[in-house]
Length: 383
Image 1 (cartoon, one colour):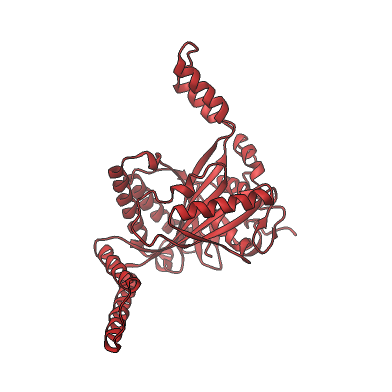
Image 2: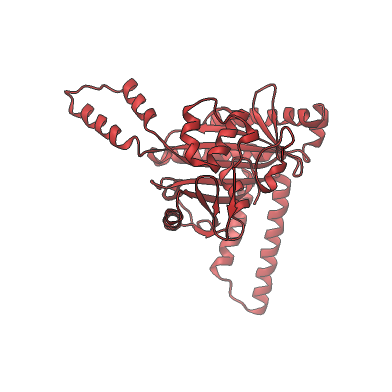
């Protein structure tokens, strides 16, 4: 059945999404008429975080906290999504870099060793791509949208203000935004998520697959614990338990740096307005204090978990007073493989990697299709 013009060819609930190209910036915006959101995607480049010294890591974490506080301050952002993907690398980029920056001298032992390493590791290598998606809450920004002219054009004008603010905050945090993605670039990401076998071809040929109307899958088969799309099998894990104790900034490195596994890590952040966060913290403090008084009255002993929860509430209040934002996090991991046997092995390996990162994961049974769109696509979809 032909689809209406401007809609995305995605299965399930995502069929209602519509595309809009901003005439000012050329960015591709994804409009959800049911949830009243407008989403843009930006690609981020950054240096290797795990190779930095601890003091520099702490400084970058503090700067990233200021970026999140900027997102929470306006009250018009519905969702912020950070998507980190591993993509197969043909090795041409590594070889081109060595040709340009290296010194291919056959008489030098170091040059010969580097050349052999590149020839062996290049075709089997993988590269990491990070995108940041920003979703505007059109209901919360209704007054500003009417002032800007109303409709989708007014919403795009309001979203451009948030885009400029976020870009400035990212640059101050030593992150390099490489521009807001066009509809064609978003279509390549969507097509590559559903059909990983075609990803290298889409990257090599610049104009193939740059159409959101055909970026969806040909077929989707969902079972209880996995989902199959055009050329791959997928499984989605939910991070149900984050670390309960203080950890280092790079605590997710066992998951993000697991080699030989094609996966996508998606962190979905839902910002809370400062006044709403303050009300929630006051409510939690009153509940903890009243429960503590009631336990003391009947002679119950307070355990360590209750004390830790209360100290966590106090820490959130101190962070909010210091100017930081309060966000609700959802972590999702999508594992992709060509066969079911490889998929089961990779899922087991990622579960062990999550244990090393002090996290607990659960396989999302019975909702793999919905979870896949939230975890593997940079569209700020809620679970």
